[in-house]
Length: 447
Image (tube, rainbow, N blue to C red; front, side, top):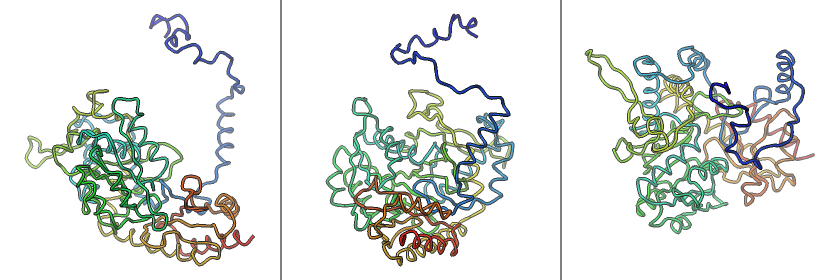
């Protein structure tokens, strides 16, 4: 290979990297293993993991344990979908049709007309949407509520770029009320100005709260000439109004609750959706799939639309770089949404609401436990342990000994909430699961 490219040594391939950036000592690597030995080593290493199959889990905070029907797994595993990359509409007609159905069904759920193909994650979708808003408005600031997933905010910061870069977008964090979990509207009005490209908030927010001020937040953004971007968990839309109903211009979120299992790494899919208007369509960085009649009456074909404005066509001159496809998960989501239908979404939403609120009420009865925002949440809620005299870390360690994964520790990222954890309850949790958690917490706190 070196001969073919005209290079004498491996080192010659890296001359463009400064020497002080290259390691000069030999790597301290373990001895090479045979394939059989390596397989045994990996199995032994992986067996140290403790899974949600073997433990009762109440973790959420960005990726959630929902029921995935067996039919969804069966469809996703079919060989037709398991390709490394898509082909042309003529050769991958069925795949393009599935993608079109994904966009159509998600658009119906969101009550919006234009949905792009999924990007890597919710954070990626939010970052792209904020850059779309900056291009639409010609402004370079965004207002974001501080009650947001720190990991998602980190991704958003990457998309907004450092101040030294030409396309930098300044982020102004908006406070929330620690007593209610709602956005501080006074602080929002101060943060929004003539340079604000967009206001971004989530319903429900990261802390689980459903902000009933959503329409007022959108009105504040609109009055300043800014776009309203709302992040949403799509499985909540069977019981909650779609963001478009209260003024959202761009809607983003995750598709993971729609038939995608928990994964310990990698993207699980994020979406971007808007009204089907030229000003929005012209700023999409994603692939968009369209339908058209063929020359044969009654026959339809599916293909890529607006490819010219994406990085697939224009590379670095595209609207933004899209380089990580999670399109297999769109097939899973298509199957899931088709199986659920409107009534299915309503039913699962009602079940989640009932079980989550029952769990919060049950835990709130325990001595030393307080539910921070006891009303107006969907599937996640904040549990405070200040009066228990134990840290969340101590409580979670003790719960693991009982075969339970407790809530996500919020104490470092949200110190104003004290020793608090974010607990998640979905349709998979039964009454006995909730009682088991309550009993284990009571035992742990009383030790």
